[in-house]
Length: 192
Image (cartoon, rainbow, N blue to C red; front, side, top):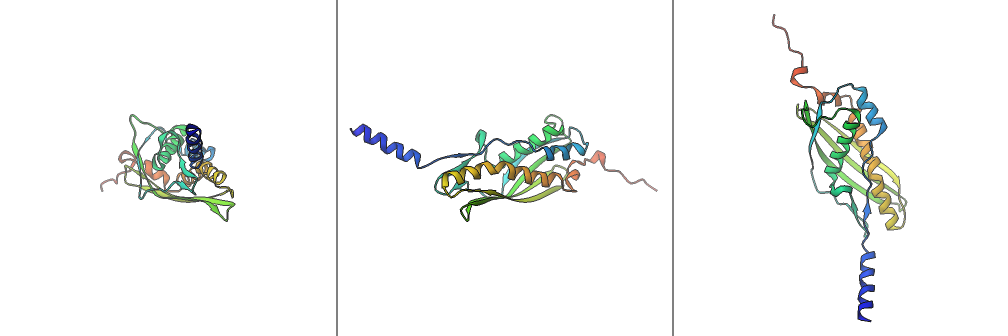
């Protein structure tokens, strides 16, 4: 009888703390199309991504938003940028012209704005080894749910389009192409 009560108590504890798994990143066709249109070639590798402060991924009292493949938020966004560059034919891990690094300035979400709406807020800066950088902000709105477990899973699912949108804003920025300019590409002034 004691064993049955202990098992029931453990089952109750286990159900009280759910995990909400965010899916793996999926490249955006629009971002890949924009990158391919630049016709730059295999020039970049992606280095370290950091965060200005710790992201709180705890969703209501249900549990944390869990990222796939043991990623934290900066490494998830780093992998997303790598995937976009690979799909566009711009990734070169062995002999890159530039190294792109990143800074996640802000990453926050709400799963219950009025119980039925939620949003992710992302602010990301991509920096090039040539000294140039590009930043973008995204507030991605999504339908949430009154029930915590459903609302938190919808929040986890919404991370992919939120990251897609912020990366697309960075890539389509007029100054994004400047991240790939190297010393060999800068014209020198002729002597008079």
